[in-house]
Amino acid sequence: MVEISHLSKNYGDKKAVNDISFSVEEGEIMGFLGPNGAGKSTTLNILTGFLSATSGSAKIDGIDILEQPLEAKRLIGFLPEIPPLYQDMTVAEYMNFCYDLKGCRLPRKQHLREICEVVKITDVNKRLIKNLSKGYRQRVGIAQALIGNPKVLIFDEPTIGLDPKQIIEIRNLIKHLGKNHTVILSTHILPEVQAVCDRIVIINKGRLVANEKTENLINAVDGSRRLVAKIVGPEDQVLQLLRSTQGVKFAEKLGRRDTDSVSYLIESEENVDIRKPLFYALARASYPLIGLEGDELNLEDIFMRLVDPQKKEKNEKRRRNAAQAPEAGK
Amino acid sequence: MTAIYKRELRSYFITPIGYIFAGMFLAVSGLLFSWLVLSADNSGAYSYAKISDYFVYLLFVFSVLIPLLTMKLLSEEKKQKTEQLLLTSPVSLTGVVMAKYLAALTIFAATLLVNSLNYILLYVYGNPNVAVILSNILGLFLIGASFVAIGLFLSSITENQLIAAVSSIAVIVALLLISLLADTIESEFIRVVLKWFSVVDRYTPFTNGYFDIPAIIYFVSFTGIFLFLTVRVYEKRRWS
Image (cartoon, rainbow over all chains, first blue to last red; front, top):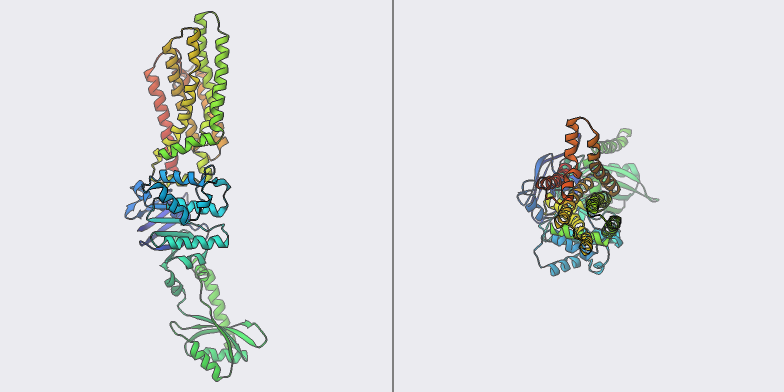
């Protein structure tokens, strides 16, 4: 549905976007991630025809945005980073203006009413946009993007500056829209992506860093499972026992949380469930296991590892040192 | 395109700008008109000349008032980030620029038309030349239309309304004064070049009741060039 190939954009000497390629299938919700200044907005602005690429192409449903801009733009609903609202219009006036601007042919009254209901702005219809709260403005911005029922919806940081309740509402709305639209959602808020998106594209400093299905990405970066176990018993022996248990790749002490138990981080080999062997091993040695919880790697970690490889190395080094130190002391 | 045109027209009347423009234009031109008519009482030939002076004075009124009309056309869109909506909608750049231009031109033309009611009074008390009056109205419209294009262009290169307004006033006043300067320059070449830019020289035939076809073409192309440049400003911003 959306196809970006070898897209580059230079601002003077600075390469804002550097040879990015990805595509979004019909009906997919794609999370577009990256730190601030990574080139997210630039990419989306090129995709929507607001900017032109230095090289490469962007196609919507097979239509090149540069070659047939009007046809391509008709397929897109776009909410820019700052919602493009005319402060001196009421919500209803603004919606009608956008309806005319986009040359929409759906039955006007019904279509606009439906959109207002979906994004819940019906009750502010007669108010001036400049008097609306941030949350409502954001929604009017989303409503504007929905006019004409475009195939592709592009949201640039739609939940920025909203309160937690509004964030959840907008997130649900996007999820709902994803059922019959192709959605590109740019953000740097990771739980948002985890909650909503089918596919994740991560860019950093203008370059593509990852392009994976959401669950694959989590597995790809860290295939093994990590557990945090609370165990009562002498630390050195317990640690040794943990390391000798079948399927354990790595174990380290995390620290003493309460008086008699110690927390340990345990990493298993890929695709091995070590919870049962762990339990029996500890039971045989009479070290009571009083807590066990999964320490799943979340997107924050993945993101940090992808965009900041140096830190990743540092972390691994630290971990290796921690793992080897007790053995060396033996 | 009509959506942008309508929105722009409407915005002139929900902000004070439309009223200020029309009010000031009619008030100042009315005062000028009364003053010239009243001070020209007896000799017919003399008052004739005075009427053509009136049209030259009006140009200076334009120089201040037209920038008022054009200053926010594009600068405000950029500042409020609403241009992103216009430029990602299925409307061509030329469409956006033309819609903005025509909206400002409509307000200007409507006010000019209302102002033209003044001339009816002349028929009550005398018998002025119809051709002089009509050609003057046409001349004023053409020169105003090109000033609107200048204002629109300058509004496209800044996001500050005040800068747009002040620079437009400066450019228009400079254009008006060029002919005075040109007369004092001895070098034939420079004088010819300056004369070419002098809008007042193109406009004078109209004040004498003469429909000057080359001048009409001059003003239309003058307007066209500035509209084209405005489109180029946007085109360039997309690529840089």
